Length: 90
Image (cartoon, rainbow, N blue to C red; front, side, top):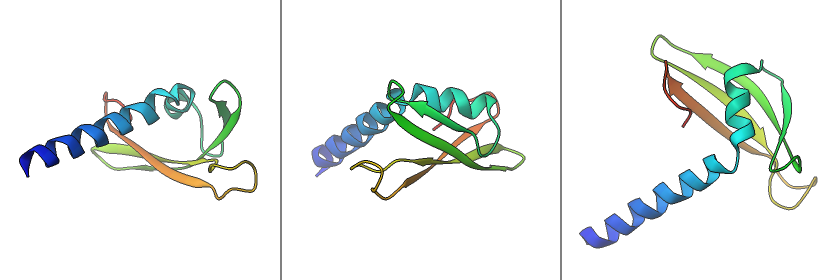
């Protein structure tokens, strides 16, 4: 049972790392661009939009709209990125 939990945890961690690593442009834009900013990532092949920003005393979160799989007709994917002051986006 513990071994299964370990493998699930490792898989989730690696999946999260892979998605963050492939979107460096998105993470850079989160630090410097305003809401409604439209940018490109994945070598200029995919478009993203920074939709909204939410802030509290301890952290800031930004909502990003990403394209879905399957081209322009695909459903959009909405993802939130948050960080504490001085921290990294997660």
